[in-house]
Length: 478
Ligand code: NAD
Picture 1 (cartoon, rainbow, N blue to C red):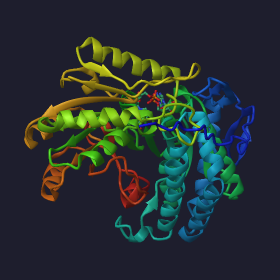
Picture 2 (tube, helix red, strand yellow):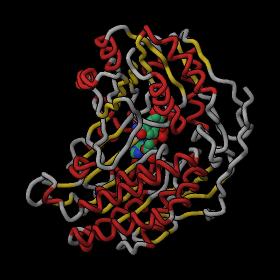
Picture 3 (cartoon, protein in one colour):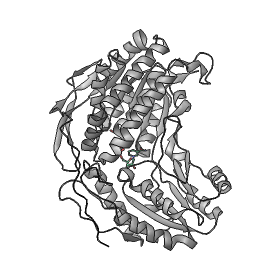
Picture 4 (cartoon, rainbow, N blue to C red):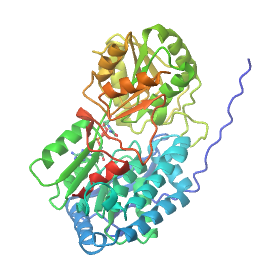
């Protein structure tokens, strides 16, 4: 049967106006760093330098924390919840108004397909602000006592995989609860956080309520270790999370950690296979697999494994890898050279340990950071690719015979962030979900997010919940 080729359908980047350099956003204004430096942020799809971005040093972080403290003591802490809500609604509406610009900017700085930034990331960002705006004047009805109080100044550090969405997860509940924030975006994806700083100015948010300090790991460390911080919220690697937990231990700071994952996506023999294949693809190739809750371990019941793999290979061959700004693209660029190296290294280890590697034929662009969607079969639980988080478009397939074996294999990981179950039987969904040690279990779907639903992990995936009513708890003293 003849196949029609897709014509290129690139989203125009003329809607974004990227400055050549950016300062730090402290006390409502962009300022030059006093003792820091700067670093470049690049477009991972082309390696083009996008902007020179300030790197906050010790005195910059100190200025930001002081600004947040003043704003907390004098303006935001004492403000009525109903008034805080007005600001949060205003932020949500401005994000909606600037949605197209923010989506394009996110795709340029991160490498994710425009279809995802436009249809998933940015709508969820706005939804988070709308949702928590609704809570701001109802905190006493949230189930945390008759008069829950804010905690104070939050120091928040986020990763590069969902830059603006992770910012929303952190900032919206903090502000709704009456806290002020200093947030550090990841060094490879600072641009949408800086655009959000402009949105705060547009919304006339009182100076100091939101401060954005850009920089690398050292800036993050200075922030979380600053004595003026009351609450630390971190999303990123388990290794850094562990270091932060140590540095916070013995202080009065509150801490929530959202770390890595190695989720099992379990396909039982009565599952609707075509839907399951869509769920497998969405589970691991969404956002190039740069997803802490990615379904990176596929567990398939042995009796249907040949059928599932044949259909999965067909489906993977349809994935379009390339220009993130093309509206037909399914898999974009890997976020950085360092991450690409890690994915290559772990994939090479998979081959060296004896697993079978397969990728569909696909032509990768010459410049930029790219990795073809990859499937490993013949994987054993001892292989590194079955144990370690790859954080890339790489799927490891294992099999099982009985539900008990599936549960045992799924739980055989130091992580516990998410899992998926595919079966036609409702009773099996309930039974298996209750036995999986994972913060989120999706049934006959995967990677679905909603601001009303709590998200977080067990074991080395961290502690604390973000989203929903539970997400408020981390920002309230009661
Ligand atoms: P990372 O933990 O090094 O970085 C996350 C954030 O923490 C960044 O903003 C970084 O600048 C900051 N940071 C680094 N060192 C710090 C320190 N000592 N104190 C305070 N902040 C610090 O993660 P990464 O290098 O971006 O990615 C490495 C691995 O982490 C990935 O391969 C993946 O396995 C995992 N990861 C998980 C998530 C998640 O959502 N759970 C997100 C990104 C990365």
